[in-house]
Length: 196
Image (cartoon, rainbow, N blue to C red; front, side):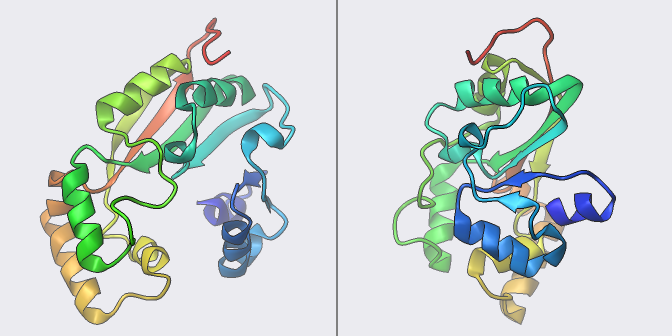
């Protein structure tokens, strides 16, 4: 997403709490070099009311206080600014854990580091508590996205995995089984003091 924003001419500033992931992004997408800093947002010294768009992709599930964190993101937005957010849909966590174990993705039951597990309704409650209203919401396929599969497996998936993934995504089974990522495009509600 960062690389697309930069290629489109956006004045992009990214934060990634995991330095190795910031380095991996710079290696895979050279246009992001120097644009993604290895900081946790609260530690980065970001100026309030300075951003038209804040993107928090695959991040909120790691944050100890997600409602307060959403409020801190609202404070960064200019009037009329927007938040785009993605998190794993964990509504049917038992199905997702079965798939993860079958593919040998994680040693434990869940993704390492996840401390929040969002369903569509729990995500909406967190965002509302942080001062946001969803403008657009939905679910994205993970299985049908070759770049995400490669990132998950840390290598290009083989032909069998790609074929099976295309069949599952083409039939919409991953979304039917709630195995994609939830996304929300949100506006900060005016006059709120949420998250503080």
